[in-house]
Length: 307
Image (cartoon, rainbow, N blue to C red):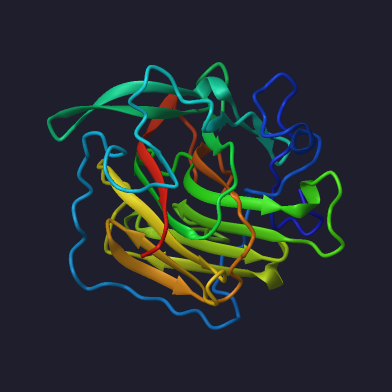
């Protein structure tokens, strides 16, 4: 926990896990945080579409067509460890994410049987309380379109999250000027001192971004109340389009089911970053863990070049 108490950090991968690198396992990362979520003082352009969201339909062999930088529909016999590390971390020295909490399973999706990653969240009545599951890409990726089709945890029982992260301080020989990238979709958003009633909170997304460092002055925080409910028990497609400055433009647009939700040109990172997706037991106000096990399901993940 940082001195100001604003954030928790992801601690090193346990020895013996399939960690991202030897160096990364020996340094403290700062990927997930307890945040005082607010709109940044910098100008933030937020767009909300007035049209209905497009349905987030399952796609058979989603990776078979199209040109992808990364695509995984999890239709193999096991999770592909050439693409993914199963997170084995402690958040804030306490909140656990473990490899065993990720597994392939099949679920019914509007009459179709599909294979998904089950990112289980264990609650306080389980023998291993408050543990989640997170997939982490082996590689770092730059600007582009990032998408996940996912069914969230069924309530405020941890964070259902999709984000990327890079911090040059984790390098064996960090550069003199720190380089930092992070882009988040957090569901539900971390709202302090207390969230609103669930009817509103469940539709409130945390769209966040950092560049240069993980300090508040280098961040844009957006709490966005959408007309889309990501806790309706259905699959939704969560996406951001990240223009990292390679072509002169630095901008992030966040979408749900193809509908623009928010945009910013402030604090947009430029360094390639690893992608993380799954669940973790966030200790945010309003979260409840009086259960045995809950499930979030990841249907597919893909990264592509922007048109």
